[in-house]
Image 1 (cartoon, rainbow, N blue to C red):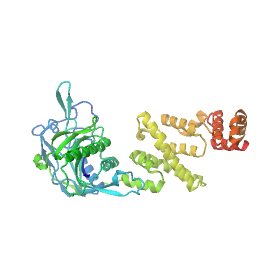
Image 2: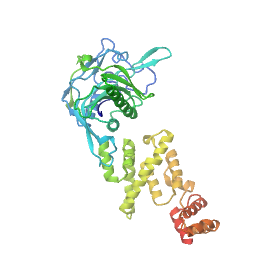
Image 3: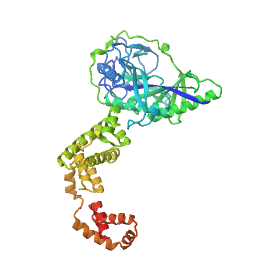
Image 4: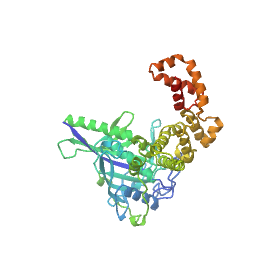
Length: 494
């Protein structure tokens, strides 16, 4: 029997605020010293009163607006009761029946495939709700001592939770959905959404049922998914596990399972709780919040930027994806293009075809050479010393043939290191490309004389011999010869 999976996601994102959700303690995920950013409020001391973080509410409503949600005019906080050592109050301040955002959606490409070109069909993943709560602390398990220690630095950090409808039907769709959410959170500047640091955490609810039945199967929840790859692998494993259970004639148990990334399996943790298990009740110490008090502007989102880049710059889908995957990198690219267009206008004799080539040349150097330098130095575009103006000048020098591709590597490396303008580096290091036909003619005659076999092979129609002789020309001029001109001169002389 064939089974179809039905998948829903719960995505948590720690919000990018200076202070915690209900107190003035610093919201700092990079704090290394345990129990440093704490106070009587976030450690649940008797007699303390919470105060709502307005910025956290604003960022939650902003996320809901970007994700096509209905923003409730009035929302309130609730107490979610459960006991765990990293939850000092014995309850969590969360939201139950009146969250800030409801009934939204996010469109992704069908089957989770890339849709940079805008040609692929879209699938709408409905969002049931987005609510705001406080994060719990963190337990550090010490196997050598047989004990667990509690660090409350994270306790009380603003945590936004997004819950989807069970509209996802494959591991690839789930992965794509989470990746797109991360991009949106970063574009909106509401969360760093770094999964490795726990700033964005994904949980999966999954069930399988026979393809010919409309009734959904028993669902299980997978926790501890701290990467997109883990989301994909966890779902695929759970589909196989549940299939084996049903094929053996057994029943799938409704439970919470943890993901063991090292072994690539899910493991049973506890029975799955329902809403009534948490005994929700309205938070008596906090007032209701009216959404009309929050005004903001939604900037261009990733999908809008994909479509614009495809239409405006006519560059490949893979390059578009690289550029938009980092908001700051896409901005750097657009600033570079602005400088290039100013250069094109000043030249007046540049064709539309050449303009496209110039922009594509800039894209190639950004997504390959510049990205490689970022990777090697563990840096990013935010602290790059090369200004868009200097980078644009560098591209025009390559385009005009004033430096060779090998010299360009040297120039770019020095620009990255010092931030100097390319013309200064070229002059200082004597890297200008040689286009002097008299000098190239003399060099070509020498190369032809020294390589009679290659000349003979060229006469027999072997084109590779010409590439060999051009290489000799490049070596003789220390990489400064214009390879196109050198090739034409050699062909003419042979």
